[in-house]
Every structure is written in C-alpha cells, then in structure tokens.
Length: 80
Image (cartoon, rainbow, N blue to C red; front, side, top):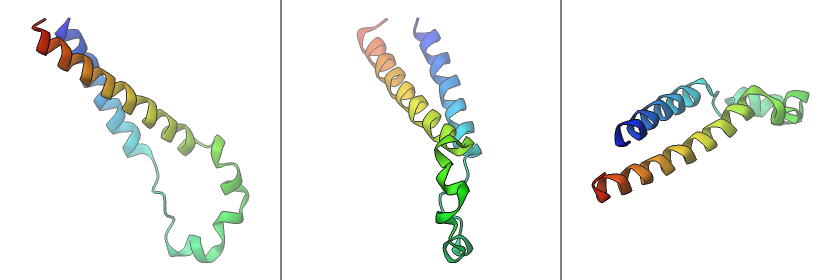
C-alpha cells in the first residue's frame, strides 16, 4: 500500500511540475503596463483562458500532493 501511495505521489508531483512549467508569467513586462493590456478583451476573458485552467489545476494538484504526503507520513509512522 505504501508503494502505491508513493507512486501516486510521484505522478502527482510530475504532473504538478509540468502544469507549472506550462503556465505563462504573471507580468507581461513594461510594454503590457504602458499599452494598457488590463483594459483589453483578453484580460476580461481571462477566467476562461488556458492560463486560468492551469492555475486552477495547480491548486488542486498541490492540495492532492499535500494530502498524499500526509497520508504517506502517517502510513510510515504506523509501520504499514
């Protein structure tokens, strides 16, 4: 059982790394600030964009990773 949880945690960590690497940066640089990108259509529809979905996935996978870490720690401490 410990091996299964460890492998599941490994796959979760790899997926989390990939999702974080696929996200774009939060700042668009000085040109985005000067150009007024905050008022554009793309900024208004950001909640439905790929970056928003990746950010949401990052939060969920991070939570799953933390829970798996706690479960694995309890299993090792109990001697399973």
